[in-house]
Length: 265
Image 1 (cartoon, rainbow, N blue to C red):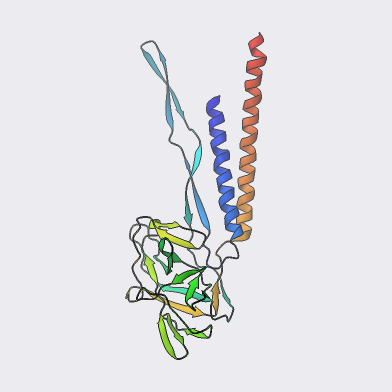
Image 2: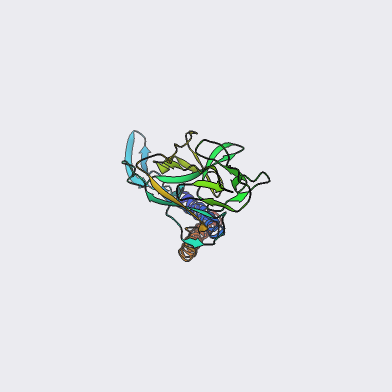
């Protein structure tokens, strides 16, 4: 009977974590460049049960010990584009990228930014200028192809499709674009930042002949969260949590009777 309690409890914990993931997706539905998380739910390995009586061992069968959420994986599909005409909105358009031979998934392109913890990678299209008139994403310095920050005179700068930034007639630098061929090597490091699992820096895609991309100034890439679908999934998670909760309540009543009624006979 206790095995049933463990199975139902693991299902409740899994659905709780699923709900937390979906809630975070909805909370970032209006965050520029946010990529929604998807969860992988897996079953624990089955165990073989046997009964031992003296020297005799009898196989009873297998039992499953429940489920768990194995990992959270960002979905890197491009979000909708919105024209804003704001010079600090710069959307990254992936025209052509190589496929990973093992996973058959497209490589992904990112803006490299300098953070206190090192170089991280962002999909956000919302730029801003800091007090030194340097291009930043959420306060983190955007890096150029030479690995340095990009300084402009004011917000009246222009960005060409290849990322070259021009301010008052001078070239201030070229926004670098980095590529990850295997997205399994990426981990979320905040809602709009990613880092590599092995700690290595991603290579630049600016001069890669296999890659074609363009930067669109005055255009914002929206989140790729499907709010309607996410709310539907949240309802499913809640119903599943509720069903397993009732299973635990039924087990609790059965154990109560076994302890307080059957034991009296």
